[in-house]
Image (tube, rainbow, N blue to C red; front, side, top):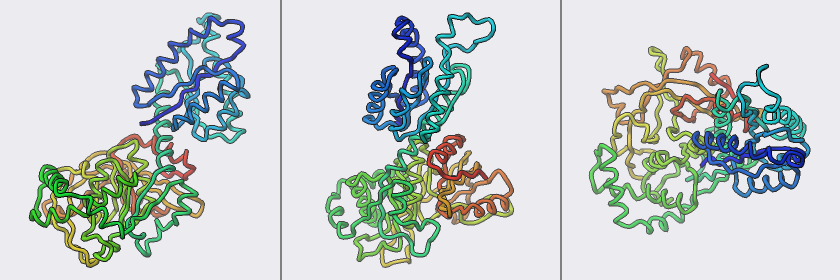
Amino acid sequence: MIKIGLLPLYLKLYDDTMPELRKEFDSFQEEIIRMLEERGLSIVKSSVCRVKPEFEDAANLFKKNNVDAVITLHLAYSPSLESADALKSLKVPVIVLDTTPDFDFSMEQIAGKIMFNHGIHGVQDMCNLLLRNGVQYFVCAGHYKSSDVLDRVTRFAKAAHMVNKIKNCHIGIIGSPFEGMGDFGISFDILKKTIGMDVSTFSFDKYEIYEKMINREEVEEEYQRHLESFVVEVEEEFHKQSIVPNLVVRKWMEENRLDGFTASFTDIKKGNGFTSMPFLEACMQMAEGKGYAGEGDVFTAALICSLMSVFKDVSFIEMFCPDWQNGAVFISHMGEMNLNLSYKKPVLVRKPFPYTDAEDPIAAYGGFKPGQCVLVDLAPSAEGYNLILSNVEMLEPVVNTDIKYSVHGWFQPKRALHEFLEEYSRYGGTHHLACVYTDEIEIIKAFGKMMGFTTVLI
């Protein structure tokens, strides 16, 4: 739920001298709330605020409801010093909706309408104080009915929700980050300090405890689910046996209320309890809207968790091979993809696993469906983080070779392939990233701005 505070601002002087005017703004506020709710926002509205104590009450209401952002709406002029301290205390983005009831205020307009349409200089007064007080704010100006201003407000609101999610997400890790992979090699303490996320490590000595929580009925139910969801090419007994480590991960995530997880396949060993790598649960969790990244990468798992909070068609990917001939990039990974994005029913197979003494796991393979996508990569840099974005087209995966027994897909960037790859690495693009099926790149750009990332579009 994208929960947003709405703060209507007004002037006490008008209530003292013309108390009958205020009710004229009721329908204006109600219509804006309705239009924002139609765009998917859940609105927490405060009373109309005029003086400091009222603004303080509104701020406390928003904090109590853990809103992602606060939208201000000037019904008239409102002196900025009345609201400044309350707005500074919020610690969430302020979205300034600079609009009025009337679209036409031309030379044909009557003087009586001035009282209902002069909020813009209240906006100017307030924004100067927001700037001076270091409050993060974004201004969206336009008529609420005759422009796209509410769409722009909604983009910032959704971006703020993503910010709230990544700052407060809880990611689990099985094992340790893959040794030697430097691009996502950031200490958990630094991630806590710079992003805000929390990380919990799976205790291998608890594997048996979770395993004992799984009964035959659960395994059978999951098995039947697989028969419906996949083209199954696995022998039944082995299939059911291989379901168990995946359900162990599910139990662990549920018990710890994790927003996502990552697993380093090199730590999946019999001595650690795991009989096989839980590739399938990674797929299932992404399909359920949870974050995931491979090889112990909690960083990208948190990014995907954040993206999932607004965009449902998101998957962890890696760029594997350039297709120079067709100006495309082949994407894949060992056995993880958001199965909701598979073009056809995925095939479930026994995957050879020579990396440790663990048994072969089951894995679901599919091809990424065609469509317009945004590639999203969060890359550590010397100064902070680069958020690298690129509009691409995912191609229809027409495969007649054994590549069908792998996670597979091809995308074409909007520019020449060599230029795309050069720019991606010029800005430090990492080898773990997210693919988002959307054309709403502006929301992700706003997320980057709110987080203080350097946003790069290639």
